[in-house]
Every structure is written in structure tokens, then in C-alpha cells.
Length: 69
Image 1 (cartoon, one colour):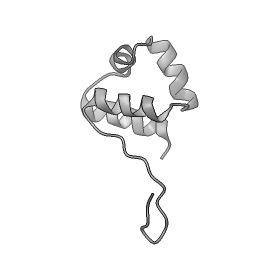
Image 2 (cartoon, rainbow, N blue to C red):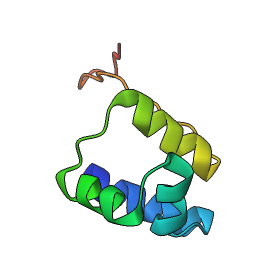
Image 3 (cartoon, one colour):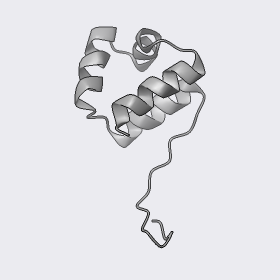
């Protein structure tokens, strides 16, 4: 699943529109939508999105044997 779909699903789950999320991020809905299409968000931006949605963002490298860094 790509990041765009994850963000869309998270917004739905949290009951927050993408426009409201964009405003909370300090950008216009049009700007946020353009960024969403490219899915080019920094880790800091993903963490801010998660915080705004009342969630946490976890990132790691996970190998098939369950090892993660």
C-alpha cells in the first residue's frame, strides 16, 4: 500500500478531512493534494501528519527474519 492510500485511510479513520489536515499542516488543501499525489513527504512531515490525526508514525527497515532497524 502506498503512502497516499495510508494517509487517506488514516484521515477517514480519524474523521478528519484532507482539507482540515492540510490546514493543520499549514498549507492549502490544493498544495497538500499536490504533495499527496507525489507522496514526497519528509519523516518530520509524516510525524506531524500522524500527530494531527492522533496517531504515531513508525518507520524502520524490517527484514524477512523479523529483524528491524
